Image (cartoon, rainbow, N blue to C red; front, side, top):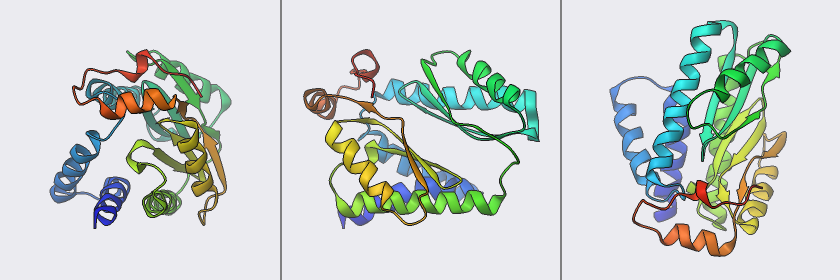
Length: 215
């Protein structure tokens, strides 16, 4: 029952953004609150990451509009850029504008130069993400809430504050999931001791960004 509930929360966070209306927003809020407490980032860092995504999206939308399709995923103040842009110059400009957003500490620029993908392609990516998250729950080698999964054109990007063992398991599960064309690791590797410290911290004051080992 616990695994089933966790799987619903994880998949709900992937599928609900594709829907519209008040009910999905309420459910997404409940799911987000439940998962936030299990995240290794402090609550302040989680809030900062959400703000970074919103500000970066607003900047790029204002300058380029529908000429680009860019997704911003911020984790521990590191921003993953995925999607499609029409030229290498615009790809570099998107990175530059994003880097200027307050509190951004690093960027993974995985934008592709080419035509914007269709809604059906993005829906398939969301489906792949949901399958990966579901397998994380089923296998149970680590807490799946601690791995951020982003899929773009069948390529799956994995983010999170993970031990080496957790990272290796997440990569293996993802690589063996149907529909995954490639796995890109953008995770931050922490020691087992640091993981235990973050997992046991209930004060909300511990900030992993101040004591981490980049992966």
